[in-house]
Structures are given as structure tokens and as C-alpha cells.
Image (cartoon, rainbow, N blue to C red; front, top):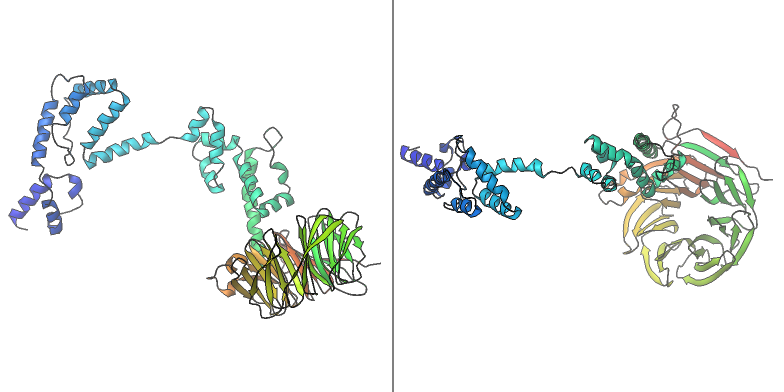
Length: 564
């Protein structure tokens, strides 16, 4: 670099803030840097004015008025590029006097003065001030609130944390730990999970720690440490259950119905206490869920019991004898018999005072259920060209599927036809409908997922070798049973993702039935299925024996009922 240019460069660099050129290791590195420096106005006059201002500040007597100080600060231009000169140690008296004057001003005047002062500082000084102010602006509100008698607010804030954040909060300081402990926040976190997640709720009931939840502080409850240690145990249980589903590990229990004249369990429903099944031999059998013993047999139908549903008051059954019967769930007494359909009643659903039945006669009947004994026909829906095999409904839609290969959607309130879902190549044997999703199984051996609002087919699941006879889904899984004797577990979330490969959708295939699978129901912990082989199987994914059993197979307990 030429000496003349180098001298000019050094002169420019000395006249600008260090923060502008600190990044350049040498001026010769870049001519661009030189051009940038040359484009900056010279600040020599600026520095001369600064020297004048500083000399004026070294006076023995300062006026007590704020306007005097501001006038002195405003004598020169804004010092955006100057560096603070080294302290000479002889201005302590001036500092003290300035501070005493500053203390006499109002808060507004103080703020205005400091803003004016900061505007005259360089970026380097701003950084120092920022570092100084940062810790002053921080507030430990969790510690401060209890000191003001507002413990409940601190507890409420921390109660929104997830488990990982709550662990971190406990490590902040003793006061945070005290707020979490006294507020029983681990207990509240577990209660929130039990309220919102059926898996947590089921575990709380099965492992009996539900009795320690949802109790106020006046009752006898364990300390917060109990819930803190309980939480990771629950997580471990959940991970084990999920792994059991993925790997097919289960404990199997088997009920042998051994009907005398005809074999087959066409339908079932269960709860924590009982299993109610409809059999090909025209009977309804109620089984104890724990002991698996037959508690009661209901007779009255003159044909096979093809479908059923029950609640806390009644059991409603449909039969190949074309009738629908209503039974008292406790006594087993027949309360009502509905005679409408001309052929077998293939499926039924009831909820909130409304019942829908469908039949081999191609029709759908909509009933008003004022009481078990007061049931009246509201409307008959006609449109299918073959037997209507299954129905489901909610407050918005009634959905029906038929051997004519179509799914039809009807308005629940008006019973008017809405749309048809086309796609299956053969008759449809089963479906479930919830929210916007319809999942159907067909004799074309496939399962289809549909958006009910637009009628689009979202996914086709292939894997069964024969007719898909029964299907259920929840938020995580689809479980299907087919005439090939197999039960398949599918990943619902992956099935709804168009990017997921088809090969990843079937999580597990369960093979234990020796005949066609007619019906199944499942929850977070188990599948209960029935078959043409006259058995009911309970697949338990919670209480799995780990004594060297092979994956996907577990020893079975067999219970046999011989009708008299």
C-alpha cells in the first residue's frame, strides 16, 4: 500500500469508533474497508468540540439546576463515535455533586436526563450499560409472589409445566422447590393426565393409585414426593404397554362357549366387570370379566343373535328372527320387542334417546327411545340396493354400509340423504365412524379410511387374505378381524399420513382363532374378540408374563362353559 494512502487510512481509522474497524486485522486486507472508511465524515471537529465540553465540565461549582447540566451536554454534537478518556482521578467531587443533583429530580426528569446522556455515548459504552442493566431487570417472580402472600398465583403458574420443566424448576432454588412441594404440583400434573388421557385413566384404575387423586388438601393424601416418584413409574408402564402392542406381546385368556347345536359367537361387548356375547345358538351369555365364568343366559330369540349393545340400564339385541329385543341388564327380563324389519337385523346402535337398526331387507330404521318400553319408529331410510350390514351415527350423521359396495351418509336430524362414498370393489361388511373419519372393511379384503365431509378415500390398507368382518379404531390404532382368522393391528396416525410407506402401517398380526373372526372390541390394554370357532379370546397387553415366552405368543388360560 502506498505511504500516502496508508497515512490517510490511519488518520480515518483514528477518527472513527474502534467498534467500526476492530474486525479488520490489517488495513491492507481490503480496499473495500478503506472505501467504507473514506465514506464516513470526518469527526475531527466533533472531537475538538468534545475537548471543549470536557474542559467546561471541570469547574469548581456546578449549578444545582438540571438545565445547566443539559446545556453543557448539548454544547457539542452527539458523541456517537468517541471513546471515554481515561479517568484522571480528580473528578470525584464533580461526580458526587452531579449525583446529589440527580437525586433531587423527579423520576420523569431522571429518565429524560439518562436518555439524553445515553444518546451521547458510543456503541461500546452501550454494551457495558446493557450488561450492567440485564441482571437488574430480572425478577424471580416465583420467589417474590409468596413474599406478597400470593402463593396460589406462583403455584398456578408452575402448574402449567410439563414433567421435564417441573423437574428443572425444582432445581432452581429452595424457594421454587418449596412452592412445588407445598402446591402438590406433581399430584396436579398426574391428575391432569388422568383427566385427558384414557391410558392414564385406565392405569390409575388398574394399579389403584386413583384413590390418591382428586382429593383436597384437608383429606389424608401422600406427600408431594410420593407423586414425584410415581410419575416415572407411570411413564415406564406406558412405554411397556406401547412396546407390547408393537411387538405383539400379550397374555391370552380363552373362553370356550361350546354351544350344543350350533357354533359361533357373532357379537360381543365388554366393560371392567362383564362380557356380554350374542351366539349363533340364539342365546345371549353374560360372563364375569375376572373369573370368566358364565353368570347368566338370556333366551327368547328364535334365531341367531347377530348384534347387540348395552348400557347401564338395558341390553338391545338384533337377531336373524327379524326382531329387536330390549332386556333389563340386571334381571335379564325382556322389556320390549320391536317387530319392523322383514329379514334379519344385522346391526344396531343406540345413544342419547336415538336408535338406528339395519337389516338384510335393505332398509335402515331410525327409532326414538323415550324409555326401554317406549320406543317409536321415526323414519325408514331406503337407498341401498343390497343388505345393509352395519350402521353408526353421531349428532351430525348416520353412516350405513351395504353389500352394494357403497357407504351412504344421512343427516341425523332430518334423516335426509347427504352423499355416497364409493371405492370398495365388493360388499362392505363393517365400519366405524367418529368425528370426520370413517373406517370400513370389505369382502374385497381391504380396509379404507374416508373423510366423511368430502367423501375422499384417504388410504387403502391391504393385508387380510379374506373378507374383513369387523373393525374398530381409537386415536392410535385400527384393529381389524377377518375371515382368515387373523387380527391385525394398524398404526392409525401413519395411515393418515400420505407420506408413510404402506409396508409400515401394519404393526402386528395376531393369530389364535381357528375360525372366522366375527367381532372384536379393544381399549388401551386389551383386545376381546369372538369367532366362528365358538371362543372368546382376551388379548391382554398390560399383564404380560416375561418368563421366557416367545414374542407374540403367551400361554393361555382356557375356561369352558357347557350349556345344560
